[in-house]
Image 1 (cartoon, rainbow, N blue to C red):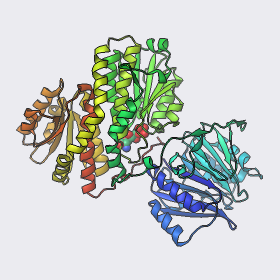
Image 2 (image 1 turned 180 degrees about the horizontal axis):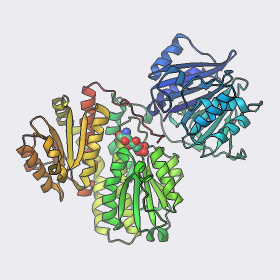
Image 3 (image 1 turned 135 degrees about the vertical axis):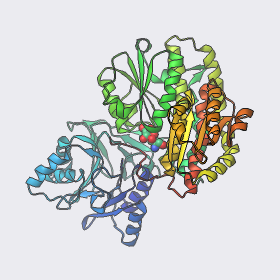
Length: 608
Ligand code: M6R
């Protein structure tokens, strides 16, 4: 959940680190710090709060040097405080460590070190690593780091610097992402590729359990037994532009507007001669045919896409499909065997609960695939195959384009698996492929046309304390996602409910000022939704209706109408969620919230 950058070269390390950390701030932003090596040894600077505080401090009193490590933190052990910010030094100040992850057995290690006379300066789990490295150090930093890492339980991406090694950084990875960037006479290390883009596109992904060393000229990678392994240099195609705001006020708004491209890119090349082609998943057809059930595991917004996925998969594969919250799956004793197909859905590919659920499923013999947005991330690495969502980097904490891209991927997965299983899907496939091809233009139209209506609505209801979102079948998850978006970035309480459940309790909430957002596009549940809306109106509730354009009945019932283009029913969640994303965005923005970095949250949840 933290961001890591390391640099070795001829440039001003502080500048490289601060610029790199700015691109990683979405990973955590409660404190930040750097350690820079110069003639006086390893010099630390740490600040609480946003990265700007650290940058200002470095402006006032620069730390010069051309080797250093930097970190932006999301607290797990110890409150946000300067003493708990990374890097953490050893007692003699010679070792400095930055860490993303959790050391589960830190109490035990700390007790041992304290008994040996070591004094701890922070409340973090990470600090024990710095002391362990110092304890094992006998002139060889890689050996000392390896010995220290062998003591740890939990998850880590680590970068370790030592004052006596001005041309060396040691890195280690287990459970948290880390990659090396190769420059000319300079090398980098980071949690993801964005800090590297101004300097290089040549990267080495560190694998699970591996360690590595970088100097200005070289990079080496080692397995968990410290045997050197060949490095695999890859060239990233990501552009810096893609990682920046592109003229929008917030990343979230930019990402909402990128949805036509994200959906189009997710479909591209995966339909051949009108048929969905999943050959990139490299699935063994006989293994797929042996499957008896499908389990979808995910968290948050990805879970809501999985709930839509469940409906699609059951419809087109006829296999019983469950959508599981990954954090529940792990502790609920789910029935998993070799005839279970597990699909992990994750934007980041690093969500700890999803990773652990996937590990559990694999350990019981399940066939594992994923739907993921980040190439080379941990979840795809654990799977037989991955359907990448190709939404590009999603920086805003609130997931938007990754969600609609996941829904798109589910349409493809359900049809593709249906075909592999010999189900009669030809007519549906023709209908949905045409619908998928039309979607990018429809989302574009929606974004151009309906912003005014949504803005008006956001202004009208920004003072309201509670919202209800309702939908049925394919759009029940849309209701959940709409409510999550609103509460996540505006801090207004919102509930998502299945429309049919209203009269079983929540209807009691309805009175004059209570707004309900009803998602009621054309489809087999529209009539029922209109009845739900009538029930709310009869109790003097306020209803904002998301309906298919030209739906006169919905128009008549609604206090506010938000229209979406006509589409195939199965595709309606992709269109219906767009105005809800915008409603959350404009409401939060009008309330002056920090839209891209809502309080208490982080983009990538790499701890349980
Ligand atoms: O990266 P993932 O898709 O695995 O992340 C899962 C959730 O943490 C994520 O969707 C979260 O709910 C979003 N902030 C919602 O907007």
